Image (cartoon, rainbow, N blue to C red):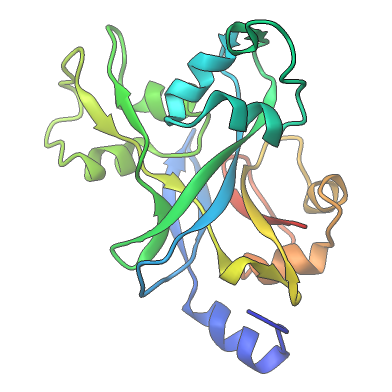
Length: 223
């Protein structure tokens, strides 16, 4: 993607494809970046807390360092006992992750979740991980034959979306945020929120129109 000239970029995005899953009876889509090597990059997940959680609890959900979450979100780390600071439900956070190449596509597979009573694959995907993964993706990643049977204490791999795109956007250094579209979102609003353009978001995500739906996952370049 360096220099992103029209010919090479068009050829590149032609390799990108969209995966589909049903979310609340609406077809949602996620941008997938093909890959063929073992290199990795730093990436971010856009995550809305499903309930009040301590910083350490959020970090445990994604198996990342609590301080890295605080610094990624410009939260003061000088507070006493900052890892036990309670973050409010629905707070939007950027979660730093390592994006790797697995089975020919970019994703993060380092997150593990221990199932609890009353959990279902759908509740884990849609609520706890806020739509960053689908129930079907968790089922496939863990070779679950019967999703209705989930043992308490079962350690589940939670595959999470990420992209690298060579760490550049329009020839400039960038890190990519996986953003779950909300019902109130527009592409213009997302572009404005992250200091990018509609055209750039459409190019990065190989979109043919500006239409987006709740549950779509977009790759958003951050400089």
